[in-house]
Length: 579
Image (tube, rainbow, N blue to C red):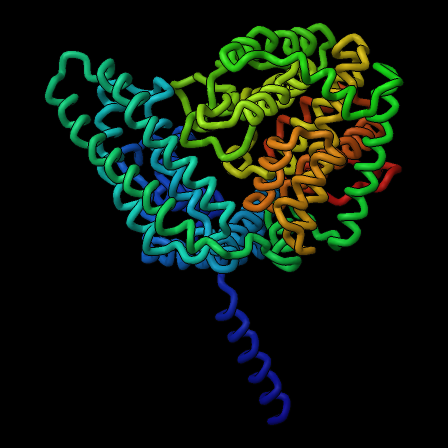
């Protein structure tokens, strides 16, 4: 009997210890989500503004080491609490969102602790001030004079960003500093030329308000000019660091951001196989256009039909409607709004090597509707050859594909769906293999569905865009895990992506600071597989799949797969690809 009592006592003690080790979460999952994003917006006020949250509009980012370490501590606490919540009774939708948030939190921690971009990438500091101001002035979410007051408050905080940069940065890669110089010098022009014109209109007859702006802007111009000089004279000679993050970090990035855990050797083999498939199709299509010319000669024949520097933006504007009209005519996806994006030059502070981008109101924005389709112009200080090569990328056939990618049915359609996303987390969390994968998927889908009337020049342009993304896939892996240089990457883009030399270099250099830009091809392949599985199981039309896929937000594709097949007993016959 004493032995039984002792056993019962031990079991009671163990149960008590287990109860003490795990306790029910102190707040609901919904409250946790609110707290997490409130903290994220407080840390990145300009991102909050872009999201449509305006209670931080008068603040600008604090990127001192102290602030960064505080953010790290907060993220670690959120990670611990989320693990407790995941162990509790969550609904299906909450469990999906918890997985998405877990990847984001781990990714943010990894960026601060391991990648340490705050210490080795000056681009984040060079582009931040212009972005923080521009997000206040380009959309009419509040009266202009009210937004001007917030602009003044942010302008006053800009010198501290540059002081933090000078304190934090240590031996960055030269490629990063080169781009940061371009961005900082562009920001000087933005503060001198673009911003004052808007401020004069916003201030109206309020001379005192305009005077406060002028003083604050003068300080921002001086600080930015000084920072650009510091980058050129002080940091550039010391910029001898390696951009390569290594195989382990590369794999961790993919797991956190895209829910990909495929071994890198298999991942690379898949990319190389896709490159060969697209290259064979490119060669066959080029022969249809002119069998006597090499594929590169045929591509140059197409790219010779390009706009002038002055006509670049107008030429994109003239052709944008064609993609939308085709979507409507073929009924390929539901378009929730008749509002169109505005085609504009990429802002100077954001010219980091991209050729086009879509900038839309954030998912929480309730007043402003302005969306900007940015196209990067030639720079005045480029050589005539560089300018010519840049403009060749905007030939009418490739521009037709860019319009599909950026607007219809690409990123702009994703933006129009954002208010329909079923949860806050799905409005806030974005996976590149989903967002960019969808836009890249749309290019082939549109041509497959007859866009361009089956003309081989349109198909060739679509295939060149595919080869470009295939090259990114391979170059990113090899530059960061196999010792390739930017120059080797650029050569690969020229030989296998049929890119002009200047554009090939920009593409490879982008891979230095955006290592996992394989997500375009990776996402496209995953969406194609999911489409085929979903339609086979449900009998859905192509439009029904597109509506269902885009309607869930840009979650990692494995989570979208779970959502679309939730509650369906029958399993798809084909195996889902990892993505």
